Length: 382
Image (cartoon, rainbow, N blue to C red; front, side, top):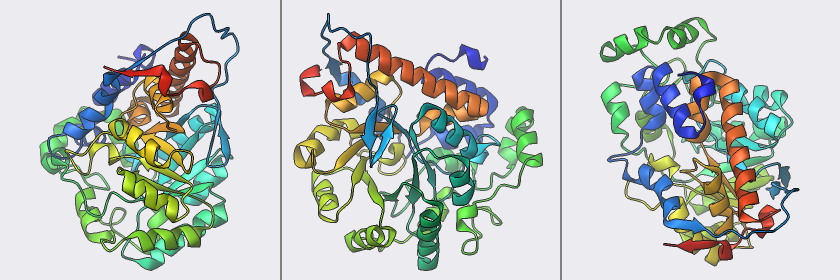
């Protein structure tokens, strides 16, 4: 299978599975417990149908929207995800350049493998920093100050990762950061020589946003589950979120809001946006899918705060359904991570290009010329 054989996000998943050692692929692909929530994140879109109009004159359409004060060419964001150099040697750099080419938002994680400063120097496109609140208050302050100096456009505080979900695929494979060549996976690494050579002889695997504060994940191998359970601040509360918003002073989002009550609290502390997200099903298995919960949250706070539907997006029609249900935009991680793992920057560009074409085609077939025309009248639940 080649990159040119990839015509949808599932095709990129298949190619990534061919090219990655199985512990690395399972880290991307896996989720918590029985992975029921991960599957529901995508299948939720199947329960709603789009209602098209015809004879609408759709030669010219506008797919752009405003997200947290910056124009995006598409109502689509590339969500921040950790450890990207474990998937491809170019890591976040490849994603940043692809996002810039298409004029869309992207984010980097606190656990990114390229630094805040490097990514800021690489692109003028809209960029988000995903903040994990650590027990080390100096580290939290350092990351915020570095984002201010680098002129990041927004910070998203991750609020659904007080402790780690039980990611059973990672427990079975022994996946760590940095990745280790465990005995059970040696054959998989040996039969993926391109990945293995890039990892061994490429730039040293690092988590540079933690420099000066944390050795875990860079100089000391640790599982993501152990990292979250030992390094992150379980005392984080609404006062913490309000204080971070004030310290940051710029556009501020909460990533991981899943209830209408929490959406209301986000408005009250002055957040600019919420990302309705269950962390790709990697935290609380058995929680609702973001799309299932979207309408309830829109009814509670729609028009008062930007609402980004995060998770499960695999098709342009999923983006259109999200907007019709009241979201400002949609976002996802695996939708580009599979492509990054499969082929680096060209893979991410092809994946985003396919989604762009699907959004444009879907809008024309629905008879809408602007994303602002997508509203609940265009949806029917089965």
